[in-house]
Length: 338
Image (cartoon, rainbow, N blue to C red; front, side, top):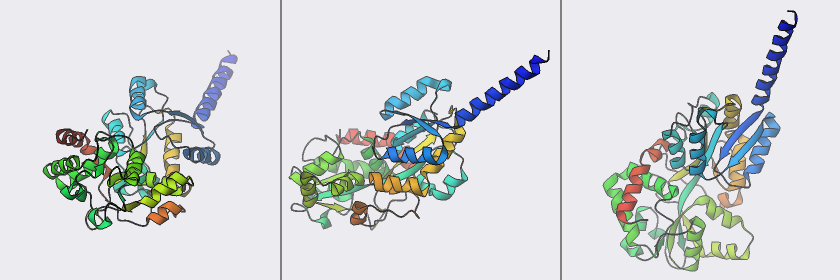
């Protein structure tokens, strides 16, 4: 009978060690595919002692996996780009409520929701061919629908989340009727059918295939930091405009994440998200992947971002971008922006 208390004590000690071991692990499902993030994760492990087990994939694949794993999912964090994708995780009921005084203090209210937060931003800028268009003619997103640009505008697909989020912001600011009018104006100005990614649009502008396009800012900054002769030539051919500086400010989108409701390592998960809002991590986002930090006090040391200059950003809450995603797709479809 004396062995029973000893056995119980040993079992409890074993459970305690298991719990401790779990606290030192974080299971991250990430749709961010940037090599520079390796340093971001390594620094977290070094400073916290928490090992990151990472699974990377496309957003829809990861969301489907988390949903199918259900209560048995090992995933602690879902990390991705674009408010539309984060909103989808919310709509599927995958996130747990996010409660952190640190995040509330460091991340502006318009860049977080009740269950996910933004950790970096990227702006949707206008790129133009300096020999074909004057900067004064493309100062706003609305200018892109002006008939004077007929046959001069190129874009990636209207169904891509980057464009859907921009359209969602237009709906939020201008209403559905004006948003559809804008979309039809864009379609009327197409130089070619939508195709490729943002870098392809920049290259098309530089080559004169079209005169103007929209791109996320970090694609421009990436080309600006390149030492390849072909990239240097592209940058020489283009100009960049911060749209809507006199009104709503330039549309921004985000990279962000949240804790999953069945996360087995919730303490490690909140430490990770709070780390992403730290000065060190914020600098990794800016200097490593040419994004802007969400924490205003963080100093950026990125020559491309410095050269692009300061701008006034749209302060539209990220919840609004999520709210109008479905409507944005409907409007683009009606306008023929495929």
